[in-house]
Amino acid sequence: MNCERDIRFELLARLCPNSTGADIRSVCTEAGMYAIRARRKTVTEKDFLDAVNKVIKGYQKFSATPKYMVYN
Image (cartoon, rainbow, N blue to C red; front, side, top):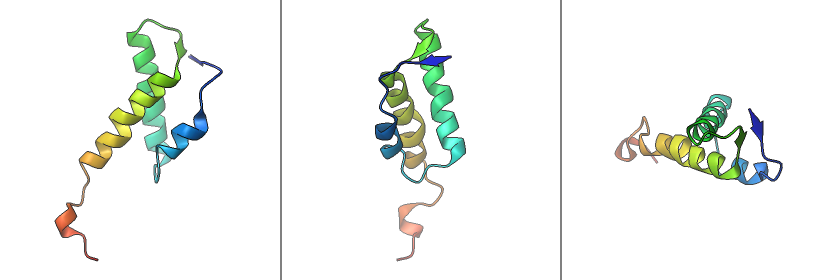
């Protein structure tokens, strides 16, 4: 699947701090799925932003360590 030329990958990288390669791959896969659902052959920046919100922000919601268990 192709990407549009005007995607700001630096912005996407800043939205994914401390992400692993697997996280980035999940974002890319989900962005592709958004494009497929919209019956498009190219992935847009909005697809990537929606995927970041779903994948990365979703991981932060369901953290493995509850806040009250973190020792400072």
